[in-house]
Length: 391
Image 1 (tube, rainbow, N blue to C red):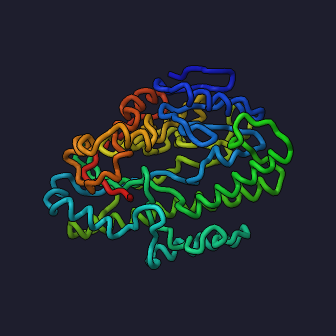
Image 2: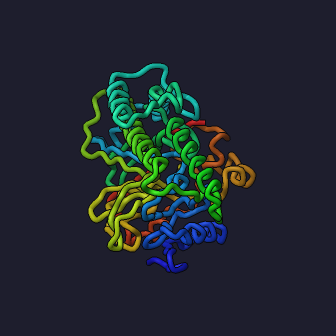
């Protein structure tokens, strides 16, 4: 159940450190927040706005409240196969390597050329850009080659097994370098506008753009384009991962379900009797009956959920486990041997590069889900058997 931490701050987080709380309290003081900021159970410190927060604003947008990975989110596919069939198909290492060959991994690594399906998606994005007067090459000459690439950090591809032994494909990524550049530009514009107007901000990264200005409209146009890029980026990668699994098992994947959802995004919605811009930074939308995906960290469970439409949360739920250690702190605190123990039984690339992604660097995903029981209903619990990540 939620806890009210202030006039305009409500929290579902049973594990909330003081610095994260103070950051959320600063956001909640903004005069255009309505009705309140909702902190999800996975809330942790972010740049400007808290990761795991839902920020509804009237006639204003805060670019940092969406973050620099615009449209980051999850996609999952339920296949026709069982775990027995998967394991009978050959070594899981071969499957991992096949997936790694199909999808460019790591920061700054993109496609050498466009596949036919990627070209169709790039054409769709170019048509969108033409409609809004956007030249995507302004944010990266190779933006089109970024479509269908994973990135690094906590982005991942997994082959997982549900409670009934069914095989799922699970993937986490966003709008890549082009989305990052769009976000960085508009954060700078917002900061400069507030400085020029001598607005007193508790945090400069809470700088906002007011509705009715060209700066607001410009950001909104490019934000929506980047959100579509992220959605199509995940679709393209999932198609490739499904093809890799089909090749590994000798027959095509037959999908019985596909879910694709953002967790860094903004949409216009109705809440508490008013039309507001809802920015979810590390949160998924969870309207009644709406499917969603909540991943744990590598080595732990992930969840396929359906929203309960809880109004105080602004129809939202957590997006994952949420960090308890920064990447630097995790590298100092944990060892490669501890990572190997946490990943026992999972096919993954054994390297110290992933030490900052060790499950112990994150909150307990089971506690996060327990805190969120009034926000979502769990449909499936997934346990990964193959994990793919970039450096």
